[in-house]
Image 1 (spheres, helix red, strand yellow):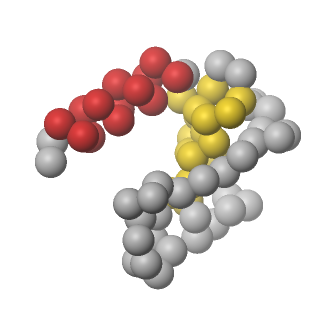
Image 2: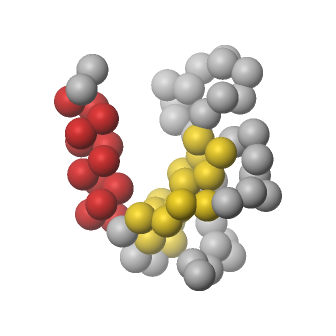
Length: 64
């Protein structure tokens, strides 16, 4: 299990005013990037290595 104490959660500046339908990311934790649903902040969290998260962001950005 990933330790999330001290996680600084943020949403994308591109999220806009979409009624909260977005994810929050905490990338200030050592060795992990955590992702959660902004509508369910006490729910499950996905954890990625920084390299895996960077690859995901690159792939998502190139598909636009």
